Image (cartoon, rainbow, N blue to C red; front, side, top):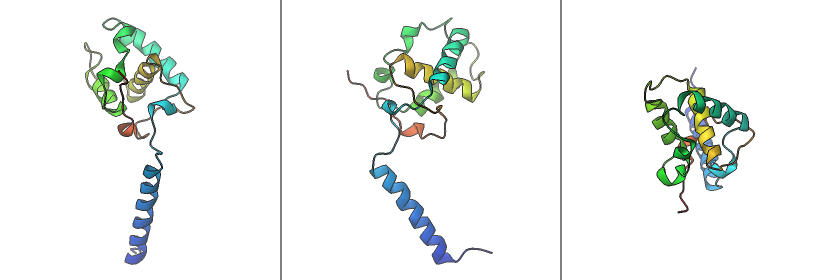
Length: 132
């Protein structure tokens, strides 16, 4: 049995307003709000040594905010997960790529938070902003 149409519309309007109110209050995550966990970044550091260090020095990952200015963390994740490691692209799991992204954020001085970074955490709304 389908819900009454007017009740269904009211629910949709309510959910839209709820979503809009959060966006208006600025509740989107930001790089300064700690979008990854410290443990996740530590795991990413271990993965860096095994999968990345043979091609990239840690300094390669610094100033990510300049290179990715205006782009999102999700864009960065997709670039890394789709093309790295160069000698074996797309070989790691989703959590492993997220751990590497967390490590890159840590190397760049972005603070960790209490929860690990997940693809469902609105990473497309989290933008890199260069101050340079």
